[in-house]
Image 1 (tube, rainbow, N blue to C red):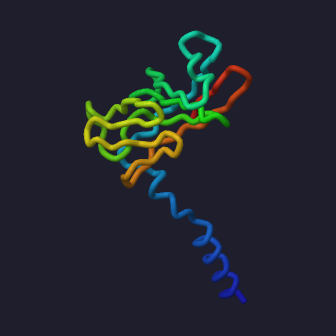
Image 2: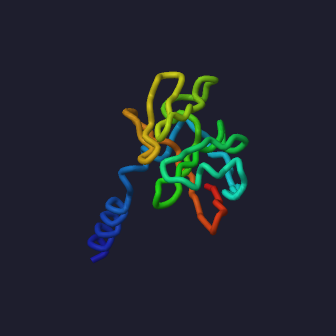
Length: 137
């Protein structure tokens, strides 16, 4: 009986492990604490009120935070290429709903946070409260 309970306990642990842990635990990007608010009524953030618009907010994270209005909510990512160590060229550049890395010309889709590479963009949590966005990890 003890062996059966042990077997099911180990099986449950193995099944509950996520296969995506490798993709979300990025060895290239350190975990910096991020917690700030954006008032979208301010003129510098009004473009985020329209679906499909994205902008980089500097001063947070490693190279800033990319915020995208998806039309059904907001997504935020670290504005640093997630597929190599941090270099001077690893800051992402926005081009509509895509972000490109200057080091290796990877292009990330901001709706999905992915490129043709092993690691996706590092996501941040976004909470909307009226015209205020809170971005944190």
